[in-house]
Amino acid sequence: MKTKKIQQDKVNVITLGCSKNLADSEVLMSQLSANGVDVAHESPEPANIVVINTCGFIDLAKQESIDTILQYADLKSKGEIEKLYVTGCLSQRYKDDLETEIPEVDAYFGTMELPGLLSRLNADYKHDLVGEKLLTTPGHFVYLKISEGCNRTCSFCAIPLMRGKHVSKPIEKLVEQARQMARIGVKELVLIAQELTYYGLDLYKKRMLPELLDALCEIEGIEWIRLHYAYPNKFPMEILHTMAKQPKVCNYLDIPLQHASDTVLDRMKRQTTREEQKKLIQSAREIVPEIRIRTTFLVGFPGETEQEFEELCTFVEEMEFERVGVFQYSHEEDTSAHLLEDNVSQEEKQNRANRIMEIQQDISFKKNQTLVGKTLKVLIDRKEGEYYIGRTEYDSPEVDNEVLIDASANYLRTGEFVTATITNAEDYDLYGKIE
Image (cartoon, rainbow, N blue to C red; front, side, top):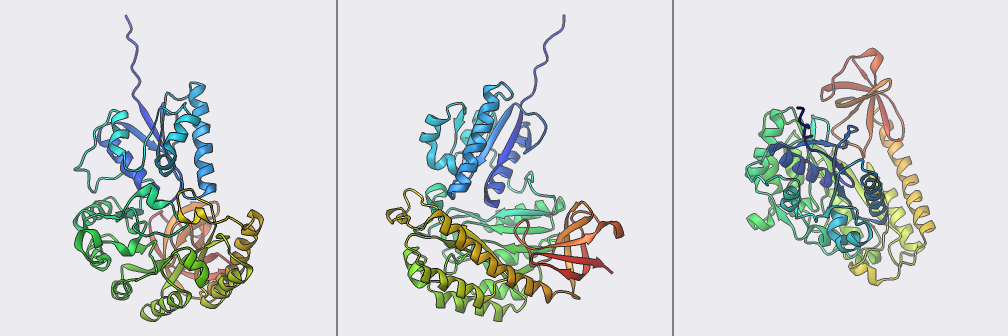
């Protein structure tokens, strides 16, 4: 007599949103794997259980999350998957509404409810998994989340509602995790947090990012350490001095400024001014002459006049940032800006975003042209068509410039560092040749 084979559960984790969500998905996957659960990240292979890690930052991200939930809810209704769970920021913020509107989902979990999600997946939360991590990124770089939550009160931002107050991870645990990553071949650490410069205040009663950087720089195998999401108000200049003295800390800083009009900055509750931001950028470039600065701006904030927007345009032209991203304002419930009238049309928001990026495109082209003929260290991320695609220390994964190297003339490996001479430069791409 034949017995029916019991199929083992397979979990497919779908991640939406930012790199911080990717880091959370890696923790979830590592916990499941440690419990003997077959788990994959965005795998094309069939899985009977799907977990969607959602984003709830702005309207476009929320809509993408809802569309993805509906897509998999439909698959569940058709019997193509057995169980569907939703976690992350959107679930944290709109759990009650989602349960009513999309009841096909078996359970919704917030950003702090990992043990509950694991329990539903027949897994136990293991506290001793520090440093053991399944990666969603290529094996040579990893996003290392050094803290969770944010204590800032920016009027447009719902992150504190979804992520809670700032909580730093102890230095020793981060170092242990980074050592484990180095042992499996990781060469680049991208440090992320809702507010990087606040690191350590809760645990050590002072800002401790420079000390953390010093400790991470001692790890053999780690060659690049990159800083994302710093806050300009009361920026600890020690970070820049550490960057200047530590070769492993990339000459790169992601510091979202959001705007450059004092009146808009005041309405945004950013606790800084145009002049203070200007002085900070100038100081950064004096302390670290090779620094490349990435920033993001928010256009279409309630009441943003044409004059205020022109102030922003002038600022972008004057400061000549190496990397710029633009978001269009999203009117978020329960934020203090929601009390203001969202009176800039969607069409005008788009026009203003386009205008900023047109300005930045010219700046980026001009700066890239200065690199032609220079020899740079490049980390190879992948092979794509006729080219190997890599990055310099001045570029972060997925959002910044890339270096294209002719694949027909070279044999390179993903995760390998090479030395390339820049032969041509476009707005956002560089072309390199291995000498």
